[in-house]
Image (spheres, rainbow, N blue to C red):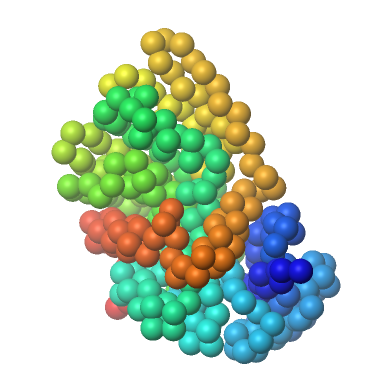
Length: 327
């Protein structure tokens, strides 16, 4: 019998809970170990999801010989160090987005993956969402004609949270851009690639984090209008418009269960519900890549992660977003 892919999880917050529920749906993967800086938290999580091991330090999990691949779900500011440390123990890595907080970190992470010949992928789950996949297929087939306009937003109220919350804490690389603004930026990049120019403006919160950011990506023959925020709610819709037609992705577009295609004033609805919450598909991609001994995905490659963090760095430079640990 083929051995299942053995997973470890680092960082046991809400995203890890969603992820592990989808992991249980993947036939050839299993949860083996979890780690937190609090052994009590690790043991509670382990008991709830029936993992074999619970560790009170990350290094213990990295050293565990029964773990093949590690999912990192800590705040952004810990991604690079944890991923690099784990890769030097020979572990494959699926790391929550953003892969690192800046280009320097992502460069080091990719170098570590190559040096240790291990798999590394940014957990940009929307890339593997069936609806997003179908949207890109239709665009590639020319159904919309030449793409001229993209609009995408992602915002929800979070300023009521404690100032030490990861979203509001600048020492944890908090703010809207890296946490949720990355989604609209990703969509524009996925459809139109790197823009020629970027305009960006941010508003800042009392803790120093950026609480809303408006962006315009300027392409040779198209524009994208993008937005993220933590001080109010937005519709969280996405629109991709071309010379022949338009695609409307319903809220919440980054975890789409389908979309509408408008052509010649007629609307066709595509229903593409996800398996589980939707993390299922990136888990399958990791599984497939490791089965083929690949150290990166062709769907979301190291180059894609480098390009994405480059766009985020440019937005930050334009808007004046700097984290204390970068100064």
